[in-house]
Image 1: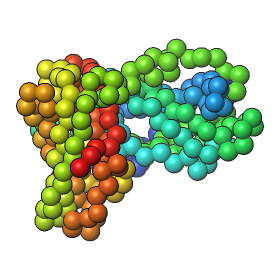
Image 2: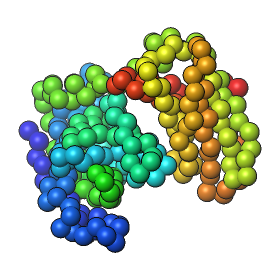
Image 3: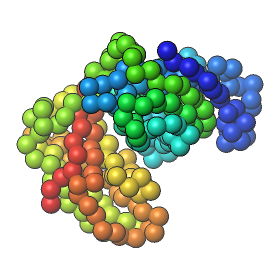
Image 4: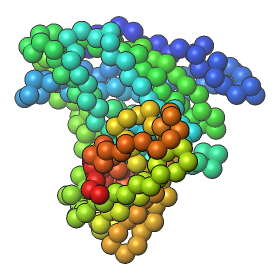
Length: 271
């Protein structure tokens, strides 16, 4: 059984970042609540659990890649016990427009499957985490959450977690991707990446999101166009040094959204 020891919203941290015209009384009292769903022990010895967020009606939170002006979610598992690693399985998000910018996220509720790997297999596991994320309606605010739970190795399969796992993006190869080619050119403050994906159309409004393994590198919103059987996405990559840098094509992750709830993922590209 889950022992949810601490679930807290750090509201002062939120208010410190609000625009001047937004007062505390403008925020709903139930802006966001969080719990850890304990899940079950897998055949490989990991624990398939989930972070369950419930947002105030109409509010949204960001996907792992928040876009140019978004707040990237961050997870600190250092307070946990017997946790050697945590793999997050992101469900396909919705696409939203806010102040002229497009971002991917989740409305009202998110069940985010997280697969915890024990440091000592067969021993009890407990999660204690600080989670920083952004939530949006007509404004966006940062939120800090503390969550904790003991993970029961005898836990039963959770239909909410199963449903979220089933909503992950499809592998691009499974939908007919035959080539993923990337080229780069230097720009004043970094690199411009052009990705050419030979793949069938997956929806009426295709939109690509480019990510790098190094999260310190800023990635612009990709300009995405379809040319017959090829999808082309162009994004600027800007490191903290604001200069061209050595580029590893295997570090590129591209998610293509179809505009109709469908998405595909691919990792790495060729020169």
